[in-house]
Length: 393
Image (cartoon, rainbow, N blue to C red; front, side):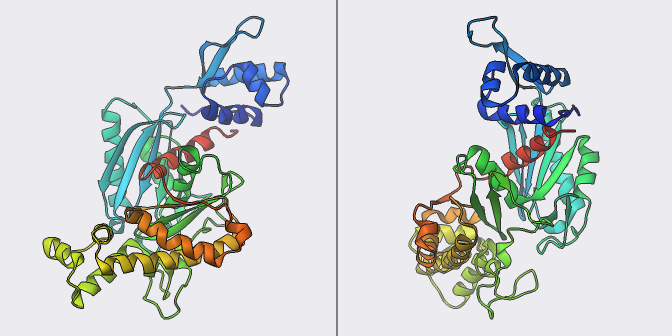
């Protein structure tokens, strides 16, 4: 379905429906300052597009009962969240309810052609379950800077071969539907706003700590991307001038101190230097260490693992404290693969933020873990494309 609302009134009505479910015309009129006759005309035109459908009779208000309307339950959207080491794909309704969800390992360093072959295979598997014959639109998140108007990644540090690859154009042709592309952490923030812990907050930060570190900024209920789409790149804020080298080419970036890769690097170095705790046992069992191993070791009381979490979380807290003074959000949500560190991570971040920020900025500031986990990205991706489809043609 390629229909789009014809004007701003129709777009506004469409955006009201996902939040409130089926609505009568009278209920819509109560929430939207539009004359009854004009509202009736716009709803009838939306019904003709197929974007909305009648849904049972509305409660009587003392006259002829009208039908409720709702977003067409037959609409299907694909949300794709591509990370550095794994990808999630989900099919949702127009109301962003997930009907099917797949996750599989990938290596983003293999380049866009190889990664998209796997993404298209996941989409085909989801269609094969019978939940979707085709897609009315797709949203895609990638772990690097995206020139948002064009749907093109630009010089992504951890994604060799992706620079200026026409992601939106290529996937739109392969999926035969409209496609929107954004940085993955922006979509995680949108997902958390729609269905997670930030659903009642209009101004918040979503800090993703995984293979890389990024920040989704929601201001006034809308994602803030900056002029070129590079807002939120906090992983490349320098925290130590003489620190370890970063994939961006500089030294001492936050990401070089406390990403999943940095945690694994420092854990391996500690074992090589003679540490003989839980980390050494896990390395002996699997010949490698990951951020998940550090989380498990910290939970088991491994002193080095606990110190790695404390030091890394402290660095993250210092950067977030700076953002408090600049942006003054109502909430900070922590997500990404390193959230397996759980409340030990929050215990390292929170004191730095509260100690280094003005009391006015942090007096009632919640710093919390994501509620949605891996679903935040796919829900946000579906939200991205539905917002586009429900905008005026």
